[in-house]
Image (tube, rainbow, N blue to C red; front, side, top):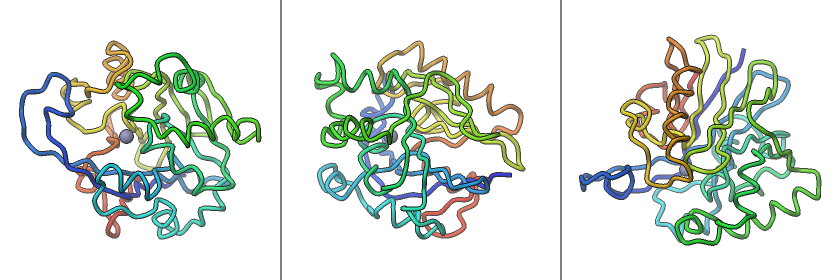
Length: 251
Ligand SMILES: [Zn+2]
């Protein structure tokens, strides 16, 4: 059976009106930045890669630590990770890929197409990109380090990716069979519990219908146990067990 950890590597303060769809409230909110680690299979599986120090500086991230350092603190050498599932190619999920030099990166076809295609250059999307890391997506692909997947895909027995789109063109979420039931890593299909629990999207969207559909997919996959792990919510460390600062055992 798999064990799953949320590993926090930074924080950022913003306001509700900057973040939730058509929200008027100016109340302050804090995002936590995570990568996730799945243990108990034939090898560790990482979900997303975080970002490097340059993005932390440029975007005013508080309490940044290298995602590689947190993974190491969780007991896994970053160079020993052969597989990383990339939920989407926003800077905070992809720009840290070089920290995991042995990994093959699994990314949805629609996501790769979007960030190498017609709309990526427009300001509304460009702001979420780390261009250098997207350039390296091409060379990594030619080095056979990128595996492009489509739709729902079994990664290992009991670990699946599911393309939901919505927030980005090919966003995928991850389900993991655990001793407690099916755990759903939503990543940015639901940044906060408020998104999936009230049906309120985030402002950064490529398809509003797909984003709403994704909330239903999350609930269906999670079933009665409701082991849902929101992508950037500080509540993750309260709803699950924080075993040491920044390391939350999810299952
Ligand atoms: Zn994110």
